[in-house]
Each structure stands twice: as C-alpha cells, then as structure tokens.
Length: 196
Image 1: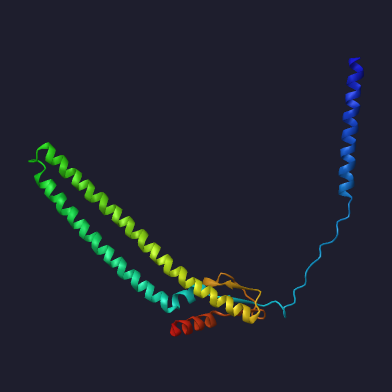
Image 2 (image 1 turned 180 degrees about the vertical axis):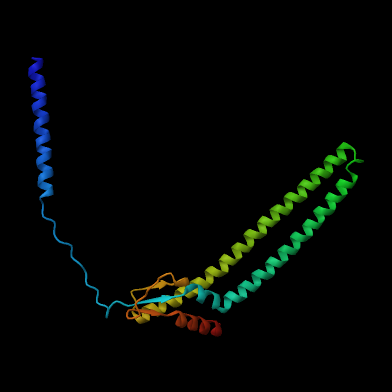
C-alpha cells in the first residue's frame, strides 16, 4: 500500500512539473510586438534653457538681501566678540583668584564661567540659524519671481520645458530646438523691479 502511495505521489509531481515546463515553453514562444518608436518633429518641439544662478545673482533684490544679511552677520559677530571678551575677563579673574578662593566661591565662579560659555555657544548657534533662515526666506522669494518669469516666457513661446544649465550642466544643447532665455528672464525681472 505504501508503495502505491509513493508511486501515486511521484506521478502527481511528474505531471505538475511537465505542466510547468509546457507553460514556460508556450510563454517563450509568444510573439512580442516590435516597439513603436515616436518620431520627434524638431519643428514642433521647442524648449528653453537658462543659467539660473546667473539670473539669481543679478536680480536687484538679491544684492540688497545680501547686503542686509552681511550687516546682520556683522552685528552678530560683534556681539559674539563682546561675549568672548566677557568670558575672557571672567576666566582671567577666576585664574588669578583661584588659589585664594574658598571652595564655595571657586565652585560659584566655575558655574558662572560654564554658564557664560554655554550662553555664548547657544547664541552663536542661534545667530547662525537665524541668518540661514533669513537668507533662505529672501532667496525663496526671489526664486519664486524667477520661476514666474521663466514660466511666462515658456508659455508665450510654446516651450515644452525649460532646463537649468548652471555652470554648463549640459555639455550640448541643440540650438535648433533650444533657446537660451537667460537674458530675457533677467530683463523682465529688471523691468519688474523698476516698476515696484
């Protein structure tokens, strides 16, 4: 009886394997349709390209923003310098009197030094973050204006897209279908700034 079940199981496995091989063979003999290729008509596909970084740095608001940020950075640096002077003075007084201080005064002075140093480091980090945040906010507003000008020109001229070619990102751009609109974007932004 065991022998009968063993033979039956082997037959079932053999039939299953044969069916899988047949399915695989049929799949491999299926005819795959050739790929259809799209022919691009250069007369209808047009795009623009810009040197975004060049435009950004030549927008009048960018120079004003950089000046404001530089002045703010200078004010923060002056405050940090003042804090360092306070710390240096406290440290010099601590070192000078350290041998003569009773333990409780020495510990108090150490805590004051530690607190002054921590406050100075926290202020330095906060100043750095505030400067970065202010610069990001200003640059984001300028980028929104640049993007709007690029979008308007692209729609007017029927471009499929506009690419950013900062620092020669693309080694070749076909002038027959692509047009450098950097100067036009800059001109419109200049006009927009003059009107404001």
